[in-house]
Amino acid sequence: MPDIPLAYLITFRCYGTWLHGDERGSIDRHQNQHQSPYIVPNPNWHTYNLRHLKHAPVTLTDLQRVSVESAIHETCGFRNWELKAINVRTNHVHTLVSTGLLKPERVLNALKANATRQLRQDGHWPHLRTPWADGGSMRYIWTDVGIERAMDYVVNGQGGEIPEFDNPPIRYRERY
Image (cartoon, rainbow, N blue to C red; front, side, top):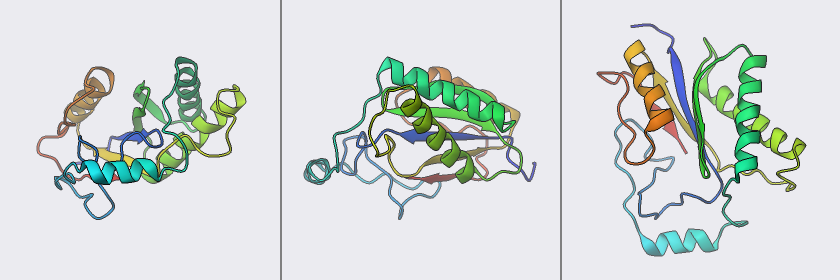
């Protein structure tokens, strides 16, 4: 096994689109280790969180999705990262990126910042606030099989549980 992951599956969500208490369950900073159970759905908690949002939830339009994808391609090209797969959805973004020694937190931050910059530059985000929820998911991919599975997931596998990509799973980190 390599000491450096071959890639990271990085996912970040639009603001307000998956709150604690949601029927899909959720992860918080206290339960973010590999195979930690989701926080159970709680309609009252979800309603509370929805009422306390600082602004309306963000859903990306087709034009916004094009801007975000363009920014991610540009960021990866500029930084010599290999973008293996990307899927910009209306409420979240999946990327599979090889970056060498760079930590995934730096990659996540760069992708979100440059996506926001591009949205503003293209006239698709006039707000001062970010369109993104805090944090994101950063999964380490350690094997060629894991990369194939992660690529398939990013391109084709939306919905349901995120599968294990490496068999057996080696290291994992998710932060929301």
